[in-house]
Length: 268
Image 1: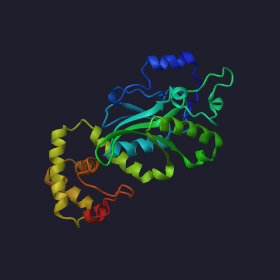
Image 2: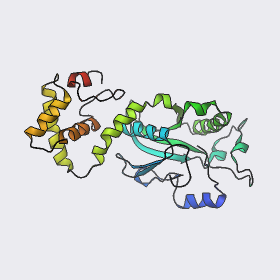
Image 3: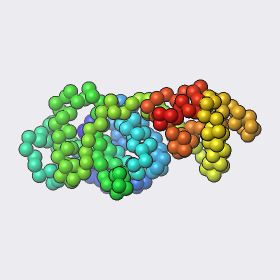
Image 4: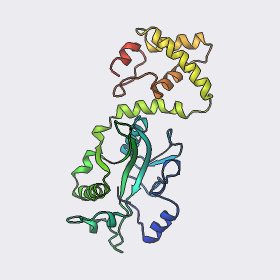
């Protein structure tokens, strides 16, 4: 995205001094934060699980992408709104690049171009590497200006020999996001001690695997009664088992509790 609020050179220096766009892991600070300007979509601030810091996501599609990346076993660090501060130095081949379109009309100062996500991942061989991802709604890809900005990104990451791709809303199913939303908070909840949660969840997992043809909701009800737990505890622990992937389901489909364990897990 291109900053939609005016970033003069003084503001850019201020951002750099604040550490924005620098560091990694818990120390990373995104170039733009949700309070910096009004986004076109739903801006979201949320605490990460793998890296326990606050993430700033500027739109619905960025939020959905973040959930997907965080849930992935391959991704171990996510840097959102990563600035290409050195783009003029990095990109040697500037032929046909319209940098002039990404400047303030009055002062001619360039906007800071950012890539939505810089991810630290492990490839299939287990080797750690960086990949860059730009997320766009398909409707945005109809605009010439969008493609002109994307071409700048593409050449920047190519010059650094870092894999870069465009991810569209079609590759980020809403059902997957809904399912991840439903289960991820169990990994953030501190009301139950982690060791106690794991022990109870392991006990529930054994019960679930005992009768694969019984509806999930029945197993959870029986578990609550057997363990003398308050109503809904079994459901909470089931969500925890999904979040930790002790139980795997097809995340592209709704998680229907009236389904049997076998039906819910056979396509995972």
